[in-house]
Amino acid sequence: MDETPLAPRASKPSGGLLAAWLAGLQGGMLGALWMLVWMGASSAWQQRSVWTAENLFATAFYGGSAIGPGFGRGTVSGLALYLLLYSLLGAAFAAVVRGRLPRGKILLAAVLYGAAWYFASFHWLWKTAMPLVFLLHAEQPTFLGHLIYGTFLGRYPIYLEPARTGAPGEATEALPAAPPAEPSATPVPTQSSLPPGPA
Image 1 (cartoon, helix red, strand yellow):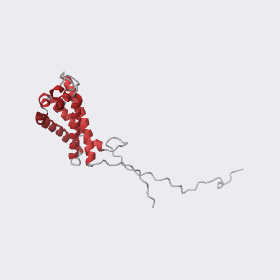
Image 2 (cartoon, rainbow, N blue to C red):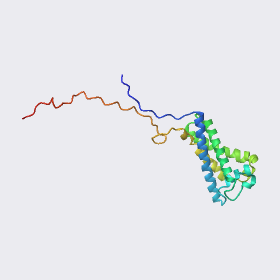
Image 3 (cartoon, rainbow, N blue to C red):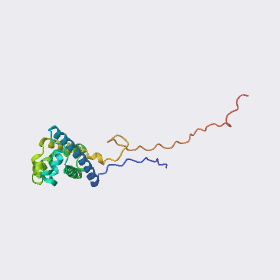
Image 4 (cartoon, rainbow, N blue to C red):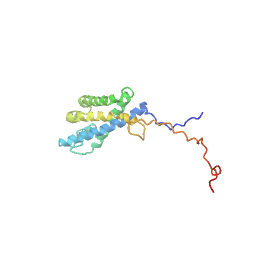
């Protein structure tokens, strides 16, 4: 019995804890970057430094001296702290919700997660850990920034998808390969088998 060879099938997305953790790291970092872009733009609109959010976070290392009119010695530290903290928050979120929510509800859960983290940190945790952040942050832009963060974090499942040649989100299950062509049952006449023509 001839078996028709099959083309290799596309691998399915991994649902393991490590894969979810790494995807959450990516989604959290991307969300943090866009959140900081928004907060920088809103600071510029308010005629403040675009680095205000990063400089405030840098007070965790340098105290009040990190607060300056622009890019200063503590700005990189504040930026690094933002990216590290929010990437880890994204990894934790992905590790907890993996396989427990349908994809349509992950986005809503991530936005609520970002909002909940804003209230828990900027209205409670930073009051003790980073009091200058608690006192000086711009509430509305920072809250909206956390909604932006949650929106991008909610897209973390796309980082679980394998590389595909088709359109994003489109299944690429391969069809069986076409069987090899069989020789025709009708014999092809040769020169020697043709009847002689008229002279």
